[in-house]
View 1 (cartoon, rainbow, N blue to C red):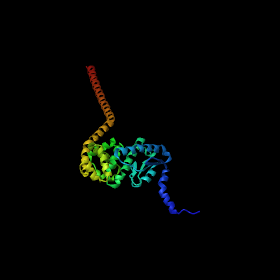
View 2: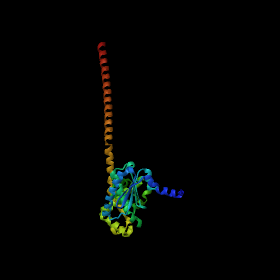
View 3: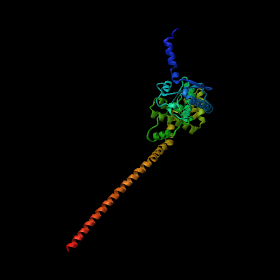
View 4: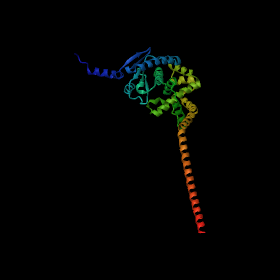
Length: 316
């Protein structure tokens, strides 16, 4: 029997190793496939149903076409790292890879995401995949890419608004264009970058309407670069946008810092009440003890006086 060359075996192992980690089964949709392990079948079926809904929504709302893409449901952390790559930050919960048009999700069996959270994550990553053709042909700022993904997936959370408020009150916002390097940030700085991104997209919508986003994407798809498209839609050079947004964000989110302080105060209020009650009890006990001591001294003084009177009477 002819032996298979070792090089062929090695190449086959390297190519197939990630899928061996996944123990792959596949669900095929119209323009996507879901790859998963047998234990995750119910989760994969849920993902496939959501992918159809979000695909239609992305087409109808943003006029973005989505060629065939893959959704990979990693069964454990090791599997996720194999697919996402060594350079992917440890704080990431999902990844969109333009090469091969892949979305990599963590199974809720180990990520502890609820199904609604997993659904939002899928929607977020599908926006990235939908923007891939634009990102490939021209520069697309990361703040817009991440901000639009979060906005569409409804991922602008209260804690992000509080973070923006605290930054407005105590610190300084980062320039929006520095967010291009977000995957190199440590987690706290990345959290601020994501909060700024979704806020920046919401500022565009608040000032110019949601339809301005569709107009911007249409011009980008037609081949205009980012600067040209932005200026045509919004009427000024995008270099000044970060400053405009920062002025707006400072006014809008600064109150959230004070709201959080009030929330903290209400959280510790029962403890403050308990401490105050204990202090009052201690003070009252101390006062009562002083009264008893004074009363005891008065009685002693009175008894001594009576004894003197008695002595004087018998001496007479």
